[in-house]
Image (cartoon, rainbow, N blue to C red; front, side, top):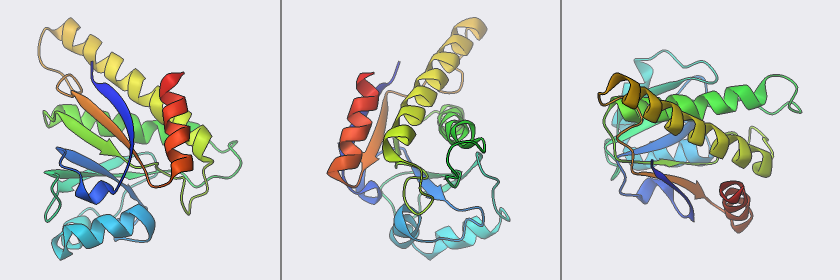
Length: 181
C-alpha cells in the first residue's frame, strides 16, 4: 500500500505523477491553490478546463499537467463549509476517493493533494485533514482488495506515494496529526 506523508511546500513545484487541484465548480481558475496551479501550468490549462463545462462538488476531472512538473492535474471540487451538516464530510471524502481512483486508472505511482476546501471554502483544517486521511486510506484499501479479487491491476494499486501538501505550519500539524491517528 502507498505511503501517506505530509509535507510543507508548493504543490506546483512537486515532481509527482499528478497534483490535485482544489478547483471550483466552473474549473476556470480562482484564488489559492487553484489560481497557483493555473498560473504555473500555463494558459493551456484554462483551455483544457473549458472543455468540461464545469464539475460537480465531490467529483474530479483530469487534465494534462502542461507546464507543471506533474504529468497530470486531477481537479477536485470540494464542498463549501456550512457547519458540517450539509453533507460536507461525505463530499470532501468523495474528492479524495475519486482522485485516488483516477490515479489508479492512469497507473500513477505518486500523487500530491492540497488541503481541499480549507481555504476560502472555510472547512476547518483539522477536520478536513481527518476526512482526507481516512478517505485516502479507505480508497487505497478498497483498491488493493479489488486488485486481489480480480487478480489484475486495479485502480489505486499502482500508487506508491501520497503526499498531503500544507502551506502553513498549522496545516502541516493538522495533517501529521491525522496521519498518526
